[in-house]
Length: 373
Ligand code: FES
Image (spheres, rainbow, N blue to C red):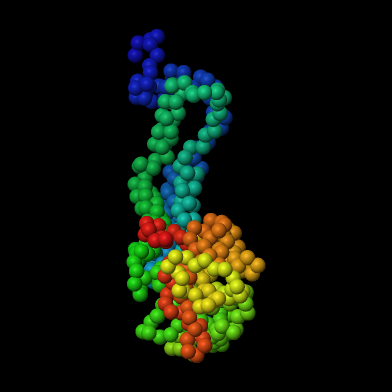
């Protein structure tokens, strides 16, 4: 290199850190104020011990990942009533997922912290900062310093740790992706009797009548609802009931706890002006209207009922649904009316559902891309 000609861009890029420092790139006041050997690995024995520890935590992380995947796929996760066999196992489903996921991420994090503390040189340097970009020489020196530090950690040389570390990262990322998109494997857009997102407990099965049963109380306490049970301007929360479920505690509990099932059965005051949504003119019975209680924003129960304004309110993000206008949202983040359940009264005088909801129940995002109203 000829003296007097300051090297620029590509030439600087090819130079080592020492050469750059010799050129004077650090003369602008970089001062190393503390320098210690890497923690615990100053000698060969210390290094071996550190390596074993990091390896152990990485293996532990992989074991937790395996346990998580196993629990996610095979542990009983559907509701089992307290007096039925398998109830205790069901209770452990969520704790098992939580503990194994925590173990997986915490072990990986511990391995990373141990690795950095054991193998990275501990150097503290300070430099006065000037306004604006640093000179070119300084920028290439910083890049060369990073590259050198990477070499010094020996990550490339320690093949066992490198492979285990990359595998653990891959597995943790894979598990995250599995949780995120695993549910979509079941195709939420699919329709039909086995499509859980489009079918609720109000659907007709084998032609059996679906009654409206008042929610709450003991599962075996069946209170079917009749028009005279609701005062004008009042409402009750109802869940589906079929005669074949009578005495079957498991099914009764399921019908009550299934998140899609709760419905507000509202009796409007006499003389109320109602504007039904197009295509929804025949879903009500006289002044009785039935709407899903599941908010179409993010699924909270939209069940605070303002009897002065005939409005259902969702306490989570304040969406308001105008019941006299087909429960369309008039305020708040909900973008879609509460789905309306088609109802009538049978010969015995009880309310029954004449079909499932014509719209999907719950948060609006399930409709993205379907073009439904
Ligand atoms: S969940 Fe109801 S407004 Fe957000």
